[in-house]
Image 1 (cartoon, rainbow over the protein chains, first blue to last red):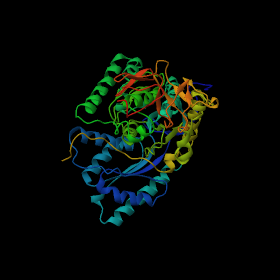
Image 2: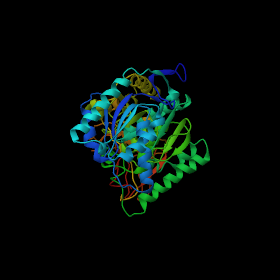
Image 3: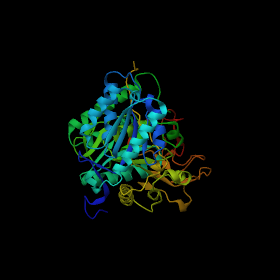
Image 4: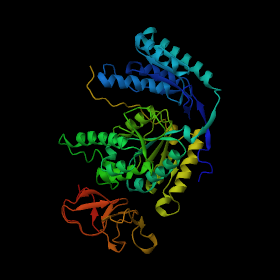
Length: 390
Length: 88
């Protein structure tokens, strides 16, 4: 247990906006699919850089276009990013993006592919910038990291009976301690709150927040039940069903354990930043790479991921800590799991032990230990869209 | 949370809430017809799957975590496997 509620757990990089990064990534970020190949080839030549090439489209409309623009800026501004080479196709996009990045207080170089001449020359230019930035961030000073500096994404995947008994409630116990220490947590996947409406009503700081979350649930419920399709087999997924989960409500009641006894302090749209500390709900699709994208670009510097049966999800810029209580998964996928909480089933350990284990691991990860998902370089940036592009 | 002990010969099971009419089996001894909480369990129920703790009538509520997680499509007998084939 904690000796001090908001004790120092490690070190991180304090940014100009006062957020603190657990990583100091130099990213090679391609903002449109046209520039992905050149960007990934350049990043491969500079060890230690992180390529981000999410195959973004042109021609998005309305809110889809606005969301993509906000998410591109959120990637660059993310506290785990120390410096960035950002690649656009045209010159106007480069100039616009450069203006948007000026106030971020970190080295950002924007390259327009159309302003170059030749595939090789363009790649070489990006390589030169990446090498320069690697040198510039190499000795960045670090600051003390406290629980109150953390924004933690809460995720689950491959849900099964053990997720509900071990990993999710273990995360919930940690979240209660994080929130008590002034930290922030985001939980998402709207579909996996369906059937948990009573829990939402009982665990909000303000009835208005409950109304906002329940409005998201109503939208989701209508989506799932008005088009004549039976989504059993989609969510719960085929692997959830194989593992023993029968209905979405059964899955929800396990997933919802991630919030512990904490009360919601806010309800967020996809990728929106929490305005205050505490537990937040975020409206996202249930597919874990997409929901992780929303929470990470909302500012989460790290994710806690409850795994039942195997699920490889991660997010490229944030360490994703995989926590598992299923003995078979632990035995078959040991190279994909960071923390074993199966002792809760056998009675060898309890939720407090598991929460202590999570806290200890967070400190190690903050101080540079790579998570399994980081070692495999797992993760994607996936932004949902509502409309067919132009 | 109520757990059956593995060393009594019973299959390891957990009942999440006192009002539940299903329990979750937490071991791999699925070829055995064993006893969980005094109930005869159907053979072949895998790890992580549910069995009925009492008879459930067709259309009856299936309760886990103290909440209704689904309705029985057919009548389900005590000890029988409870899953997508008989609840929705």
